[in-house]
Length: 572
Ligand SMILES: *Cc1c(COP(=O)(O)O)cnc(C)c1O
Image 1: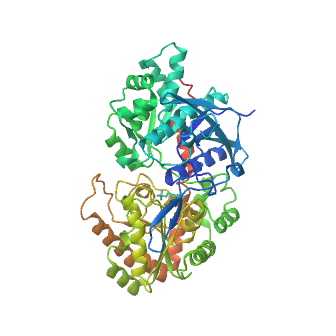
Image 2: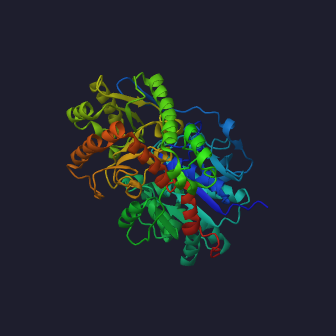
């Protein structure tokens, strides 16, 4: 018998495949990887997100590195199937009809986790309401709050319309879905003939059912809506219900999700601690992120693992036994992944990359705190290093949010540096970073670079994708790398202490740049060019120690044991 879904996973974005622009970055890719591993593990789960008919955006970058954005055109019915069930949400007093498209994520054994992508482009809706599920992170606060009504409330009601009446746990992947707390509360109030405030025992019952994962220590990552806007969108009755949950003058989605959840977690050990400091009074646990192993492993490494670790697709603990794979086989698989990447880079950007040169990769959303330009802090020093210790070439990729001036300037800066280094260091920037480019990049470079300003990187996952393919990280000690780093064994750190300041410290950039240069010159380059056997040893440990742990199979099992605890029936 097929088990009904017991866990409902809500996420504003979800990376299902590269052809579906329903994600913007790490949060969405994590959601997709979570669902893929849940399907592998046969977890009775269902997921809800928005359709994002026009995507996040398609990125074009001109010769000087200026980004422009275009809506993504994608053939929705090639990927997902429209279902009959619908729901409605009241937004600003209007009834908005919500329909859904079903996408099926199939696990290793054939178990399916359905994903419902909500869509308000329905003829009964007013023209503006029809656009509510068009653009991921588009528009202003007003648009955003309306989208969050569709996700939290529309998503909850759609699951009920589908007949899913016995959902034990609702998992909010970030605060965007927090309004589901009110939808669940309203249902419980109706069953007790309450109408305008949620009594404490009902809040306890809601909390029993909800799990909340917070994803960023960056304040802008936490949605807050002023009272006037929230009252206008939610209506007076829901505003009153919200108040009775203990939410203050603004609608703070993080606060609502914290208030409404029994289990709250950050996405790495350090991030759990930092979040606890941000929200004192709430116990905040940690479940460190992971990546879906099969999705992020290059074809040559899939073949290698199939040969040496035949169970690895079903059981990622097997990756631990990568310590026994001959180093020559690991190197051969890497050479193949690197060739694919170098050929792609040369075709795309005419950068003249050389397969024998140490290749550094840096790709993620372009946000100021990730400091994409750090490696260019001192060009003379960098040039001296390559003259003394051996050549390097660097690939960048990543989109900036359309309204992020600093992020966009950084893309232009990378292009300036590319021109300034011409003939000395080949630099390439690949436009329109997506899951397909990420797969090629994370697997095909020799070293994965990460330079966030601590403690802003809650976890980071692209270094984990690299580790799956034996690519070591060179990274600031922040997020997951605090846990995954063993110096000279799984990669190298930039700086040898874990720093934590919520305010950017002056001098931190110079200090980290100096450390980055020192590690490149004294450790990474000599190891790569003069002690190849030891370099491959590091690659092997990246797989065995980090691939075996920083995967979503281990992560979903931790959610099952610590957060969902399905064996414990909720208080009704
Ligand atoms: C993995 C991934 C990210 C997240 O990278 P971080 O290292 O966590 O910042 C962003 N975008 C795409 C397309 C990815 O595949």
